[in-house]
Length: 179
Image 1 (cartoon, helix red, strand yellow):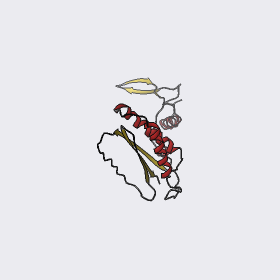
Image 2 (cartoon, rainbow, N blue to C red):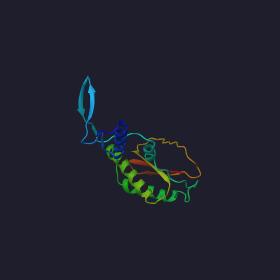
Image 3 (cartoon, rainbow, N blue to C red):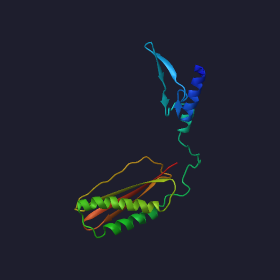
Image 4 (tube, helix red, strand yellow):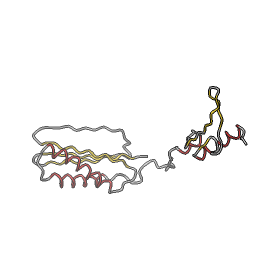
């Protein structure tokens, strides 16, 4: 007993939605005419993903609720961060002589230590940028500048300069409030 073509299409569509599709049942063959000859064939599709509107909805990102908070509840502790900068630079560089390779590594290390200690203060909703410069102290002058777009009511920075007999270090921590 052969199913009608419409019933076969409906059955195939319902199987597609379930993930495993067979165009016909396993006991049934479809006869096709190819160049005047009939041929028995069976086709199977293991999975077919058809785009639908429901798929687009499930792929959307999760949106967070607005807090309606326009400013920080607690301002960035500049004085505390200045003490952290002073302690880290003094402890790491007090006895060091200027060597380019050593100073390159010390720049990365001190920046990471400073960033970790400032993050330990747990100041919510501030993005921290830590920049450390170390150079040779050899009767020269240097001018270091930086530019940012920020809100002067909530964004701030902290800076400390360290010097010993052979090197100088400048550490800056920028705190930018995220709304």
